[in-house]
Each structure stands twice: as structure tokens, then as C-alpha cells.
Length: 221
Image (tube, rainbow, N blue to C red; front, side):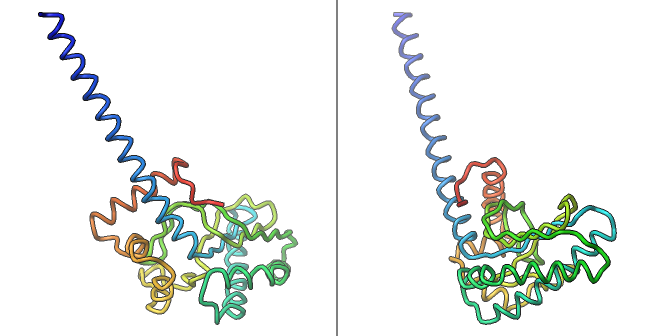
């Protein structure tokens, strides 16, 4: 009788372990699917700028910002009529040599002779805040600019929809930029990056960050 009772207990324990494992697996797969869907939607809607300074010296960091400003002014000029990320990337790709020339000219005008590398590709970005808009870590298409040895601090912003000229100190993104961003995202994705006060949204945002930082989702090319 004792052996039978032990067998039943062991069977129940094994069943419980299997059920817990299956439940955990289901939760993980569901979370993975959700994170992948949101991160893919964000990645498909956003075109970013990534400028890397030659070094962390004050002069190199100031130069990085001057290069950034001139590139953004040019991008805004040539892409003012863009309504999708694909259009913005197409225009940026067609004018890739112009971006390089502008960066090189800016560097020369400021008394430096650093080389410049321009690359449009899909890159990993950490979580970044743009005023009251927050983009979770993940893979995004971007125009990457490497100045000189490219060993200094980075500058990240969003070229399309343009969030680069917001007043970060006041935490305000203008309504036009928000509307353009909202028009290019599904409702869930837009809520994730714009509603930072909702506890449920905060949890989802952290979930996306966790999967991205651990390399557990596939929203990259």
C-alpha cells in the first residue's frame, strides 16, 4: 500500500512538474510572439540616425553634434514630402554620397581631417528616450555615420518620422511628429512607446527590453 501511495504521489508530482513546464513554455512563446510583433512593427516604421564621434574629447564631441546638425538639415530638406520609412530610406540611399560630403566638409570647416564612413543598414539600438516618446531596445534601420576612429560616444535620433529636433529638456515631442509616428504604427506599438504612465504598458515595455537585451527575439534583418 505504501508503495502504491508513493507511486501516486510521484505521479502527481511529475504531472504537476510537466504542467508547470508546459505553462511556462506557453507563457514564453506568447511573450516572444508579442515582443516580436511589436518590435517588428516599430522597426518597420522608424528610420534612425546614429553618429559616432572620433573620441570622447570635448572637441570631438562638439564636432559630432555639428556633423549631426548639418546632416539633419539636409535630410529634412530632401525628405520633407516623405510619408513612409521606405521613402525616407530610398532618398537617403540615393543621396548617401551627399551625406558623406556634408560630413567631410563640416569636419574640414572645423579644423579636422577625420575620415567619414556612411552606412545604411539594420543595427541594434539600446533603449532611447526622445522627450515623451521612448523607443525600446531592438534592431532598426539607420544611417550610421562614423567619424575618424569612431571610438567616442554616440548620438542617436529618429530621422523618420523626425524626432531629432524636439526639446529634450522639456520632454516635448511636437504634435506633427507624434501624428506622423502614430500613422506609421499600429495602435498597440504606439501606446507602448508613448504611454509611459500606464503600469501595464510599462510592463510590456520592460518585457520588450528584456527580450531585446538578451537577444531572444528576431525582429532584425
